Image (cartoon, rainbow, N blue to C red):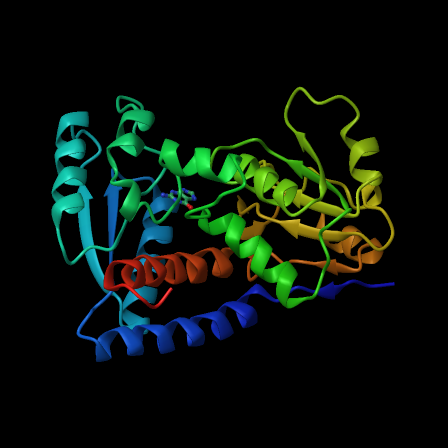
Length: 285
Ligand code: GUN
């Protein structure tokens, strides 16, 4: 058996089309949705991600408000930038690209973002609401995973789901969301014992630990659904956290890298931005 591909690029294009319609409806009411992206320093991957976010905004008619700070910018300068964007009425969604340079306290920065503009869902208040099963803003990668599963009509309730990687950006929020949708969730990390055994007993596998091809294909249970969040550069090639070719032989559905979760994350960021603009405009969402 060879798994069907979960084509994130194609699904993201459809989702972007729906977002474009919502932008149009807002424009008719005189509201231009705006997304502020704050980029600090010169992490090459972050530059690529943020450039993609800004480009997609323009494609969909969302105003992109760009703030770029040098790698040696002080924490206070970054906090002032965030506060200024919190007050800017053109900005409905605001994100600070992670990771930040080591001299800056990430938690202080995330707490400074107005929770009402927190398009990433990383503010402690929004993390808390997600943990309580009352999500107000779901982080974009988690949303992207969920939307891919929905579009492929993969049921979640009752499934054994394993997530590998406990980051605040992907692993933890995805675990909380799948739990709220009634999956039985195992959240694995570097200290987990018997990862192969846990993966082999799972019907849904989400790999998000950022280690090239660390999840071996022969660990995957026959018929499992495999979501690969990893983007790792190996020489000239991009590979995921899952050994794709051998995993594909066993899975029923699998995301490619690139072209799987990545485009969905950006599509969901655009959607979250429009949702925030609609909430401000009132009456639509
Ligand atoms: N770095 C990697 N993924 C993300 C994300 O979804 N949002 C932000 N702000 N930074 C990231």
